[in-house]
Length: 277
Length: 197
Image (cartoon, rainbow over all chains, first blue to last red; front, side, top):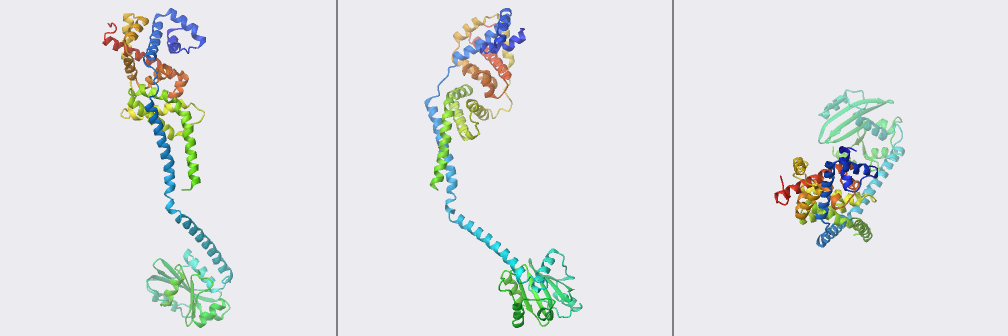
């Protein structure tokens, strides 16, 4: 063993952790080398002095108590911070279940509504030539951009003029709607039925009006209407489906045409607006 | 508050508290002594100990059951000490190796026998001087000297405590002791307790 190696094992020798395998060699080197012997002796002296001079002190009772007290406070604070958090919900112990109940009720209502819508279309107006059914289809096409008016203008009379020059065989009714920012119109023919399409932009709402001749709507066979609708239109000139109050459609009759209005606005609002014209 | 829920929370907190007390409190003496040797005064040692136990309690769920709790507590204390007392010190301690060189050169020149040196130093120095010399050591060196020479931990334990290889522990211990000896020698010489060159 040389001095470098002895130097490496010096600390282990002082701390009594020198491996047996090198202990003899290490001792032999110290016997030969005064420098290494002195180094090890000094390190041992340092350890000895620290050990003798600095005694283990038991934790003072006051410090021990302080730590326990701190832990106890922390324990209480932890427990009560959580309890306090729960307590904040206490005033809402009525509101929260009520709110949850409301949400469930709305969800249930929407679910039922969706079913009602579906049944509505599947029962009352499922016939492909049903005027109300066609109106809904056209309204969907209009919103998707697949049905576009031939003319769009801020003056509704211009649309009237356009229809006057079309080959429609009935007089198209142009509703005078308040706050209409623009309106559009186009004419078409499907299965021999001449049709007029009008669209009105009122604020953020859209009103679509589908018109066919009253001869086709009330007496013809190429388009159909529920008997109750025909009866109401003939008698009063107006019809809204009483079995489906959610159905935003209003029908009315003029001298030559039957008009069906479908809108994004609520049915009552639509009815009020149309009846005020 | 729902009484059942309150009872569950209380029970859970009580269990944690009991576990913590049983496992962590028996090591308070070791920690207190380390805090005392590290900070150098009772007030700071008390604060450091208090902070250590508070943090340990808060992070009790982070402690891996069955591992060395003393090492875990010690690491919390060491980090707390670094955060609390060394916030302003951006650079790690630098060792003044010149002191060590001077010391060894002196005793070589004087051919002082370690046994005589022991007599001279040990016979005349008080515990306070040793404590001061110990506290003046750089943190890393002081830590291993305290853990080995005062607490009597093995190299393996110290390595676990300070999270570094055993080789580093050996090296720090050796240098720490040399530095300590140099400081004491210098002090004794200044006080005229031993003859200098």
